[in-house]
Length: 192
Image 1 (spheres, one colour):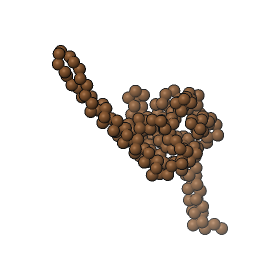
Image 2 (cartoon, one colour):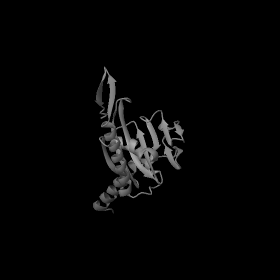
Image 3 (cartoon, helix red, strand yellow):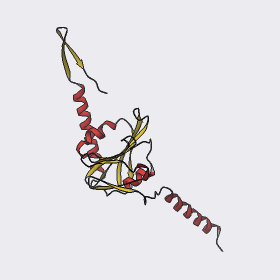
Image 4 (cartoon, one colour):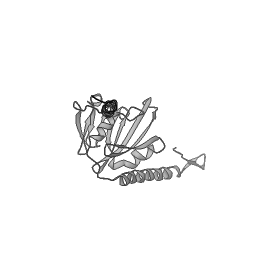
């Protein structure tokens, strides 16, 4: 005969196992796209998009709906502009992830951005939602591990943010001279 303690222990173990499987995503019917030599498994709802090998990206409809970009050549301009948004650093599988989201006035819905590394490259996944989803986590988990450790990865992102801030400061502080009505009028352009 089972004792009550043994029965409750088995019940608790079964509950814990089932909770761990609740977030599992079946990716057996996902298609694969290659971006900068990394295979990304794409869920059915984002399949049928366009891949641009020259610019190393894939998007479904537009980047506010779903997109994956390799941002190696423009980390500062892509990552740097998100530092004032709601976000947090996550660990998804073996990947360090910088996650941000905001309401997008053009798209008229929240758009999320997840920055992570696979191999020696930095990628951004964007999707129309204000939360991290199981599907996005599965996409990230199914990519090869990063060659960067945590401090190197976040160091690259911090350097990109600093570069972006410096560019914005330089852009904001220049003067333009316009000879109107016979005299010089000076304007300062503030972009923020």
